[in-house]
Length: 118
Image 1 (spheres, one colour):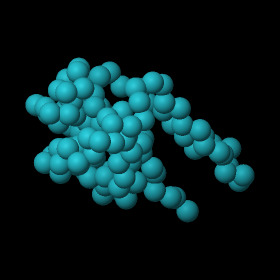
Image 2 (tube, one colour):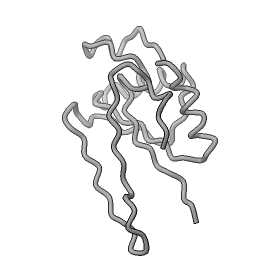
Image 3 (cartoon, one colour):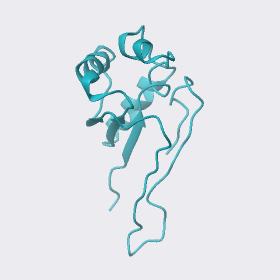
């Protein structure tokens, strides 16, 4: 059985332009990057679980949700307040398969996710 993938995706600098200072990130102006929406809609059609992550503080949740709604960004969960440090994903391998079950992709800031193939 082929299960749906789960994608943990940062917001600023990956799907929305990263403006530098936190007040710009929160208040805008915001711009959807490149083919990010096209890629998000592809993942949505495939039934992938899209979990957005951000270093934005929890107190900015409502503003962030409104911004995502304006762009009609599809997602299943929004995890906030994870900070700006290195992020590490740790996952186990299934006993009947020795394939990796976690992938990390690092992007150039503000280039978008349009060219990602997973």
